[in-house]
Image 1 (cartoon, rainbow, N blue to C red):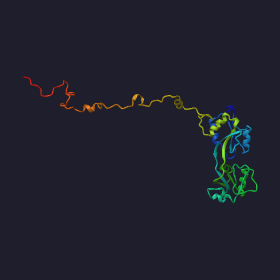
Image 2: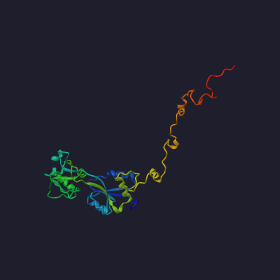
Image 3: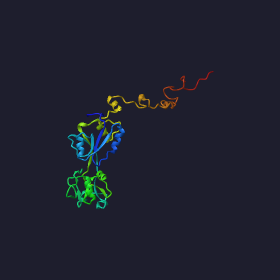
Image 4: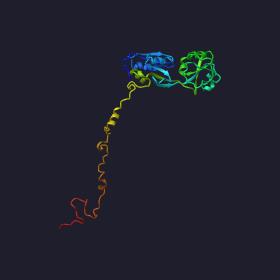
Length: 274
């Protein structure tokens, strides 16, 4: 890891549709002395900013060139179709790509979805941007397939969108130059990964104290009642000899007067004097 917290600020780029406000709020709570600057960028510009050192990290859409950039995938977006509100698709909750066979499907040059074959009928020209394609949908020229976040970003009152099943999906990731993985970059990685404020920044956590004890061979603390048989029950008073003591041996038994009265009295009638 290179660099340190000497950097006076943190610059974060993001592509259209990504909303970094949640992570920015956590940053301000944890590092109030380090300003964070947001830099909006197009899908092509964001890589120029990262490689040129104009930003420290950026939210991008996969795939990413891993030769000089590191990336952490964060989440996958649902694909939707944007249509006029009076379009037949607006009457259902979701569709499949085959349901658009009779529609002109616009394919902007900045499309983030990787289609092996675009459904529907192709337009005569490809719009330059997703924003341009949205205007064409509003004009009734065709429909548009985009990640749900872009449909929300370009929301219009006369348009709506519906989920498309079995369609390519867009994956959002955090990317940064591999040779500039600074401490501040590690701090932001910890935030987007959901680490707590006490977690280490990208490093392996130290073993817990009890794990260290176990590895060092320390004896476990004895539980209550385990030491010296302290927890065993004592026999009830008189129980040990109760079985024999309770039996009264008959005086006429063989073997004499063992266990009889003290003094060893003889059997038979006592002698009378005089």
